[in-house]
Image 1: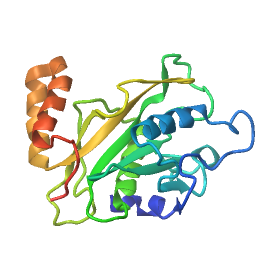
Image 2 (image 1 turned 45 degrees about the vertical axis):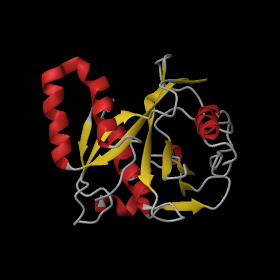
Image 3 (image 1 turned 90 degrees about the vertical axis):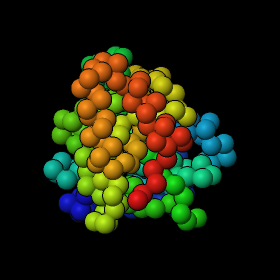
Length: 231
């Protein structure tokens, strides 16, 4: 994750207005119906939180031709009471339909992450974690419920035993969100130890196509609210 520090340094915190992107001015990008659909889903879950803390790149991905372009055009975090609920904007088609797949928007999913509250302010490292995973998608990685990710310590602390991620459905958001540019899934990343990841890999080998649903159920056994608590 430290390798992504240069990307993270390019991000800036927006103190307000987190429900809207830093808008491009040229049509069709001056509107963002895909972005609005994601925000609406989050605001239905958290009524009244219309300007959540938000992180956005100084240069939008569409304007950055470098190999170090930001993975997302923004990331927001909502106050869920006992935990912080992070969501990404950028793996789907936020502004206009550009892909040839009429069913799915962009890569077909955005990421979410739930972190147990330890402060009245959300931690910054989950933004860096999400940015790191998001960049792998743009490089060709594909994720679906039941997958796992080996990361190393997810918060950058080398003494942490939380060094892997499970990929799950976010149970509080629509299984499939219909947007003007196609369907979107919300893939929840949940931090676990690498030993748990290895358990999931072995189970997936034996269960095959039946594993995705059982992976969700097993994750609920580990953490009923699917919230990451860093050990």
